[in-house]
Amino acid sequence: MIRPGVRGVDLGANQLSYAAGSSSLTPDGFRILGESDRRRLGQLVGTFPALSGWLNEDSLIISAYPASLGLQGLAPFVDTYLHPPTFIRSMRLAALDFRPVVMAAQPLVGAEMILRTITAGLEMPKAILWAVGGYYLPGSLESFIADELAQCGCRLEVLHCYGVAEIGHTCFAAMNRFESGEPRYQLVADDVFSTIQRESGCLELRRGDRTLVTEDLAEVVNGDWKIRNGKGRMCPDVMRDLESWSATDWQRRTGYLHADKTRVIYQLRESAGASTSTVEMRYYRFLERFGGSLQCKPKWHRKELTRRVNPNCSSQRAALA
Image (cartoon, rainbow, N blue to C red; front, side):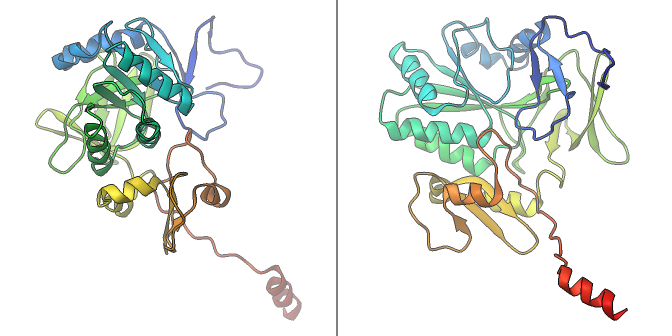
């Protein structure tokens, strides 16, 4: 824990990486990028040999991730800083240089970047490996993006990645799903120890002298890991709703939403036309009302309603007393 006026962490001249998309303002919660992050790519290939066709010098790695992952050094690397024109330019570069793309992006940002690239109508690479992490990628969104890319002659494969900033990226990874829809994770990081807390069922990770109890629920199924967001991050009703979306829904909606006990409001894409629906809100109007940005994780939990107290009524009751 960092304390004011006390130098208890040796930062050296290292590159630090904070949790991607977090709204926390505390100075801790980071990790120091180093050799273990670069080794992760080799560990991934060891766990999933098919990735050797992607994770090599012939690919172009494109990052649309809101944090540094330490991916430099294996292949040509472009950091887009979540800037759509830069993303489109790098995708064109891969296409014109006949390179497959390894794209690191969170679910909603990655989908938005790909859709903008398709809309631009320019060159597209023939194959993309989407290394997705940060939060859950709905199966309905994965299918939608795969179909959209297929119409452009581009094949999509997805690598689901699970990690936490304080411990490391891609501690677990998956290339397929359980029948229930959750990614079928395997432990990738050989320097990370994982356990499940007996009482809460939450996943606990330890690396070196750092231990972190996550808010995510975990269970081991036939040697594979099923990791689900806790209710504080993903309401089951919201998850079922997202998984029920059609291609038309995803074409119009970003996936960002506001949910409370009485209603759900969906944000429309910037390119979507006006809606007569009472549950859909124009792109910028949604941001004005509920906040957020592409750099933020979606709020897929239900917000508790707070009853407003009329100060005039309170004063009247006090006077009567």
